[in-house]
Length: 357
Image (cartoon, rainbow, N blue to C red; front, side, top):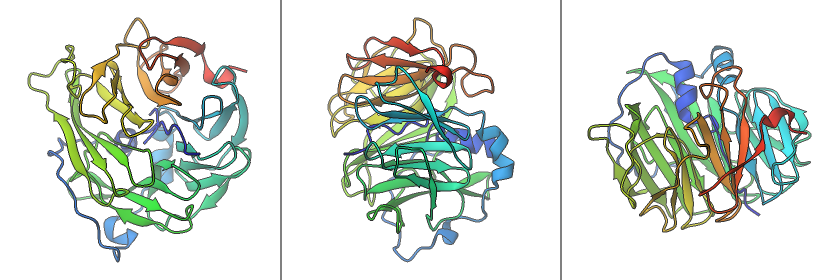
């Protein structure tokens, strides 16, 4: 059973975007992504990272980032904020604290109700008892895991944020495993260089996955490039892209990859059905593998700060919202909403996931 959701509501939810902004006060406009060839099998992690990112330097910033959550089916889910993890067994109506881990959690993934992984600022960790206890997993790379997803107990991917290189850009790597995390290898990145303000991945099988590359945000809009891989990330093909001529958050025509809104995460439930969570623009959905998109509007009546989306089927899904203030800032209250019609309408499950028990 594959993990149904890996939402770094803040790679989740800290996207690479929030960790980069936490580590650097300098931003740059990314160039358009290009197809990348498969990295050399002999390349070592140290060859792609100039220095190790410091947990002490980024920890205070990352702890105030969006939380991360995931569901493995229509009932069982996990939610993390800071170093604390909660679990739900009733589709997200109630949450109970299950563990406090070492390091701020930036990503969660479960392949069954027992087996799961957590990306943290202290490294990758694994549980085999539903999140109650965790142990470290070596990734063979310098830097912090910022996102993790396993589609079964053997096949998984992580993103690694490494050291700062020339031009104020942090090293960023995508790594995969085919043996449950015992060994890892670098795989190709679809964005070159990876846009520093958002690179989101969603895999549906051991070989098929999608990547959303988001550019510099501004005026309520953000350039976006959507890629697909059919070989586990060794190569990527561009499916759709959109620039921001004139900017603005005006509604986009149906069937376009949305230019309005700032990407929070990308989620595909299978090879055809996918969603993008867009702060300031709500949720967009595709039913044809990313070729065309429809705007589903805002989960709330007002465009409150929004985190990521997770779906258990083409109808049942969840989104995290922040009606108390600007998303990602200390003191925000994460509210969880559910949809049973693919994202067209939403209902409030928990006003505050951390105390919804």
